[in-house]
Amino acid sequence: MLSVLIPIFNEENNVEPLAAQLLATLGKLGQPFEIIFINDGSVDGTRAKVDALAAGNPAIKVIHLARNYGQTTAIMAGIDYSKGDIIIPIDGDLQNDAEDIPRLLDKMGEGYDVVSGWRVDRADASLTRDLPSRLANKLISLVSGVKLHDYGCSLKTYRRRVIEGVRLYGEMHRFIPIYASWQGGRITEIPVRHHARVHGRSNYGLERTLKVLLDLFVVKFLGGHLTKPIYVFGGFGFLCVIGSFVVGIFTLYLKFFEGISLIQTPLLLLAVMMFITGVMSMLMGILAEVLVRIYFESVGKKPYLVSETLNLPG
Image (cartoon, rainbow, N blue to C red):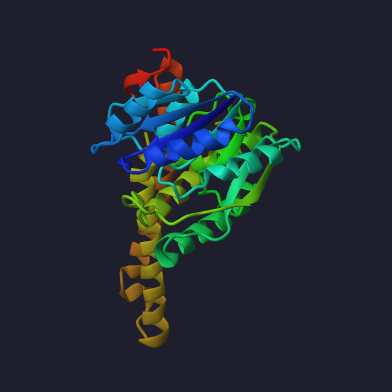
């Protein structure tokens, strides 16, 4: 069975055409499927639209989260409620192409456990979306050892067994291929189409890149062991470390170009203290991450609340 997961936030003009595309594409595959919309606290007409879709077709299922938790938590909710052996996340903004799903499944038929979409020709702003994404993808590939060109592409296919038991927090949905690799999963990628957004507006900005880098820091530390205090501690620590380098460079400038000795200014001490503070703050963020995971896993508590479901068991 195929489970298509669609996290949505204020996508009232996109859900109906997306559902039509998915039904047409999946209907040709000859496999049972379910389409699960996860409404992540939308405040426009999205809720009414997906409820109407679910009322007209039992293959369309809906999860309404109690408030806006973010894309990662919405995907986690979808995984928890889904029944398929193959999980297929896809964006709800029509930028992914539903007709690429059969190609991903065909590639999976070659023995792969994860097939990732690669938006070769992105229809996004080059400076604010495309360039930061390319740099982040290179860094993630380098740090994780899992070489993918496009971690940020939501359109992927996963075998449930390689992501079973994975708990997602923060922006970590993009790191699922890394978790799968820890389970021995075979991973590959293929080019997929990418369309410009027609309705609504993007909910992501440049600040998301910093969050992804901090999450990468956590993933690297946790390794194969397996909410977001790292955003507070790590963000502060990151600023302190950058500040220490700036102050240190300025201190060296004063010494070599202005003739001011290092012992005549407190800037060197300030740079050292800022660096130590930054590193300690990042380490505290990692400790907080571990404590949060212990809390959620030990009490069996999910990091989200569901207010209502349609065509799903309670």
